[in-house]
Length: 420
Image (cartoon, rainbow, N blue to C red):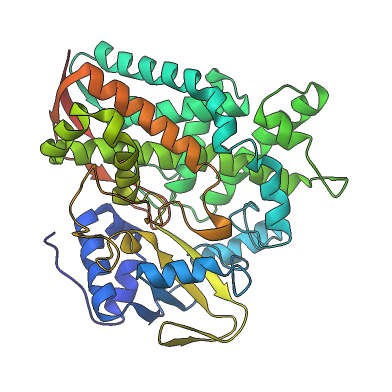
């Protein structure tokens, strides 16, 4: 990990919130490593943002995540520029463009999460095993059809989990390119390759397109319910009352986008890690039944596609040896927590047999990722099939990462491979 570390304030404050820098994984890991060692809880005031505390140690992030009463999502669940916050309020009259589980606190969070929690439970998802394995086979078939060279991200990784989650939601396959476009424009709103435009109103326009699509989907599912998750959301009731449209649309959006984008980042990042660590690939290929569960956890730790969330203190408190005042916000840097040497032995080593599941890539506590069991199933099925049928794989160009401080990963992975 060789990358120049920016240590002086306010230079580091400005650099760490600049999405362009997050396209350089080595740079990001170097900055976060320096912060963990020298300023694990650091007050930052970058231009254009409200101040916040930067939290980089695993123990401190887990402590904050553990107390959903002391540290809440609302009013600041994400790192967003003040200008965007002002535009959202002016255009919509709302504090958040999307109101979903990501922005909710109790009692709403528990009530809304309960609507689908059983559906996404490990035991319930077992009925999808055959379908997920079938899709994994189809997308490895696609590798064979592509003739030995492809961009794994653009040709396989983004489409496989999208097909899974769209099947679950009940969205027709012909609408998947539209869903993909909107997802990339939302999570990649700061990346020049995926953003809709350079206009400050671009992101609200993307959300408006999502809401128009899902409002029509709700209308159809209320008129003709089926057994998919879209029907569950469209017809949901809380305390006997229908769910408001803004929250209904937010539920669709979080499942449709986070339900595939984070998994695709993990799949692509996992393949790159295996390519760069051929001894680990051979270890996994030699005994997948033994190593796959730990390998999937290691891939998710290694990639950590959700790069941050924020929490705001509801009372004066202390985190480690630092006083946090009521109303002050903390940014939780998950990639940093997942490289913390206090928790992970040799954290910059990729090991498919690394024991334990102590990473925080799925979050922790009440707000832990609703779809984590589905993500593990999808990744396991694809890697099982890929290692069984692909004899050799190597890089065929330079991997490229998305420029985003929120959700991101590889946006290009050119590979050359040989099928068995």
